[in-house]
Length: 368
Image (tube, rainbow, N blue to C red; front, side, top):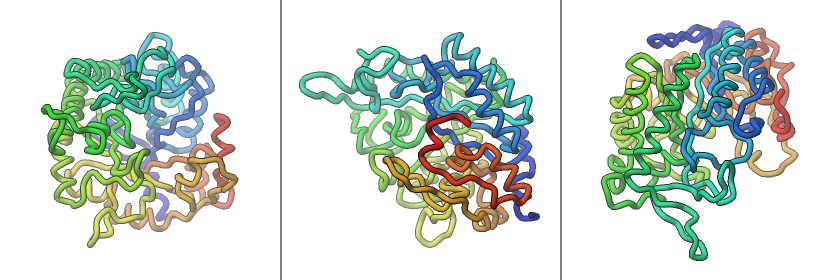
């Protein structure tokens, strides 16, 4: 019990004061018809906060750009109706004693023709893509880049105005920001392509614009990953030195916390060290980090990306707690374990691990 307490110590960074070190990882749930979060969505997040999750990072919410969305019934973060829905979520989480940040999202070239809200709009990405003579991905002009950056900045400002405690920029997993990072889909010949420094320019300008919109004290979280949904073996950088070169400009642009997305938190990021991605990021930037990746479960998420009867059982936390004790990371994001069991945090805190519910794909069918 004493070791577990490390997860339930408070965390403070400037004006952000969290009651515990536990974070709910952003997970798309698609229960917001027309992009508007409902009372059911508010209750879903409230229950996790009430059980002891210090910071809720919402599912990805699309910014106000015509090509931002790629999926049905995901929430948006623009428009009076959606923002009013999010205000209800904020109030519910705060009443339960938790803090909350929206994950601001643009899917980029993942979008397909026919997707809501306007099916005629193709995906947007670093490079144009044609299929059967039709543009299925619009290669972004410099004006497009500035319009997307402005949409993120406006969403961040709106988040601040309705009482959110921070924002997270989705720069991971092969979506738009990450598409600019990734040489595999960014072969531009202007200042937004070429070296990794140039491919990072879009993200750096985006962070700078968000910082300008929210002021110096509002926390900005940035989520990044080596892996992509299109390529699970992809790696942006191969060495700690390259990681430092990648992260330093983002840190200087205004990122306060790095959310380091991995599939398995216990895996070393580079040879010669046991540090995971969050550990290296903390060491290289001096900024707080969030670790994530199959926390609390004995099976990592990839096996559940397809239809399956597999069940992930609760897993021991000793390895996680040992890493935390060493100061490898500051916060711990929990994903599927919180989808299947809203009381996961309380059960861990109270030593009721035997009561934790296992995860299966059936948990994705409802908001519990």
